[in-house]
Each structure stands twice: as structure tokens, then as C-alpha cells.
Length: 324
Image (tube, rainbow, N blue to C red; front, side, top):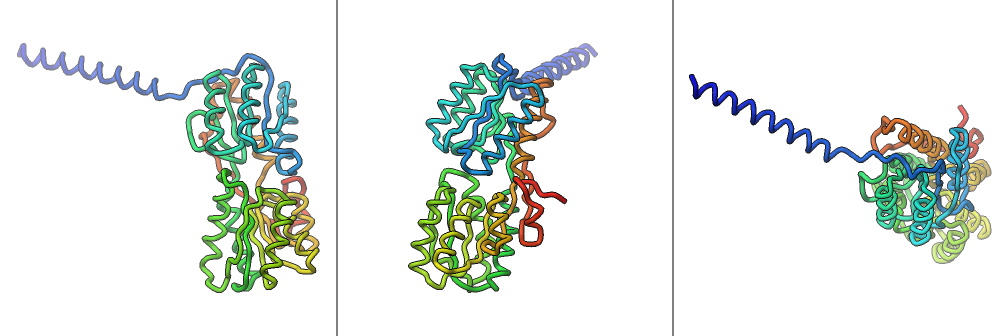
């Protein structure tokens, strides 16, 4: 009987020890709550505002933050990881409450976000992801894969499943560029009579895309279509085609007013609208909730579906919003 009592006591003690150790492990694994740098400043860091997509992000994020009572600083890293790093340091020096960022590279941005994290400043990423989890509070991005696939399905149809086409690729370091390209090809490569004859990197830039398309058209006079990683490059391709006296079937991803106008004019076929305004507003509202309560109530990674824009609904599109 004594041995039974001793064994039971040891078992209870071990169970208590195990529970306590488990509790400590759970506590250690829990993400650190970041309360902000101490000021009321919300930093909004995006690529160049010369691109209407990024200007919309910045404008909507700034308006939402001001509505919620924050002082706002909007700056651009111009897709330079070095400049982005400097801007994060400035935000840290300004004791920012939070940082909203459309980043300058999936790998290159990790160190900057980690520095903000180490300085108690939460970062909310929009549009582009980074290749690490647990240091940004949220990564809110458009479902580029879904949007690009829907645009590619339209492309196959208008190309009548045959003909030569070219691809304009975005910035190599941007995960969105590869995601969109992969999704395009998952659809198009099922049709052996659709022939990819040229693939050029145009860095999301309209002028560079124009120049690249000029050369492609000279080399491939029978070119019938273009798949483009974003609207800027697609608009540049459409302008080059017009200058050469051609009309091409062009698809893209973004949902800009410029692409809308080209679709209405018949110079582009389709684009997949990323809800830039919605994503920017979501990030700021989640930042505000997080600073006040310690939680966004959402997972870190959040995918928001794109909407296909064609001649059927292009007139309803304005500044990355689609009226119903």
C-alpha cells in the first residue's frame, strides 16, 4: 500500500512537471507582442508612386491611417533594397507605431523587417510576401496565382489555342513575378500549338516594355499575343504594337485604369485586378487593431482573390476597385 501511494504521488508530480514544462514551451513559442516604437507615426513604404498601383496603395493606406488618428509618413524605396533598409532605419529612429510596406524583395527585406521587430515595431506587408514568417505581423497579398490563371484562360480562348506569343516578365527578385508566370504557363502550356517565341524581363516598367516589344516584333512579325506580368508592361507592349501597326492579344495582372482604357479600346484583352485599395486598407486597420489589442484576429498570411477584367466589365473599374 505504501509503495502504491508513493508511486501515485510521483506520477502526479511528474504530470505537474510535464504540464509546467509544456506551458513554458508554449509561452516561448508564442509570438512576441509588439507595442510600437512609442510615437503615433505610421510609416507607409512602397515602390515608386509613378506606378498607379503603388500610388493607390499609398494613398488609401495614408487616408485610412489618418482617419484612425495616426500621423502618416509616406515614402518610396523605388525597388531598391538599400534605400528600403535606410527607410526602415528612419522609421525606427522616428519610433514608428507601425510600418506598412510593399517590399523591395522577398529575401532582401527580411533583415529590415527583423530590425523593426527587434525594435518593437510591427510590420504589415502588402502586395509582396517575404521568404520568412514570424517577423511580420501580417502579409496580405493578392492571389496572383488565381488571377493569372483566369487571365491565361481568356488568353487561350482569344488566341484560338494556337499562334506565337511573347512574355514580359517582372522583377526577378519579386515573388509575384514568378507566381504569375508559373500560373500563366500552367494553363497555356497545355496547348502545344501556342508557341512561346520570346521572353524578356522588363522590370514592371512601361517604357522598358515598349523597347523590348519593339525588338520582339521586329524579330517575330507573326507574333499574335503577349502575356505580361503587370499592367505597366502590358500598356507598353500595346503602345509598341500600335506603333508597328499591329493589334495583339495582351493579358496582364494588376487592374489599373490604364489597362482598363486599353481593354475598352481593344488594345488589350484582359487583366486580373489585384484589390490594391482593399489590401492597403486592411493592413492599416489590422495594424490599428493589433496596436490596441495585441492581435489582428487573422493569420499572418492572407490571400485576397483577384477579379478578372475584360471588355464585359472594364467600364466598372476605377482605381483598383470594381463597382457592382
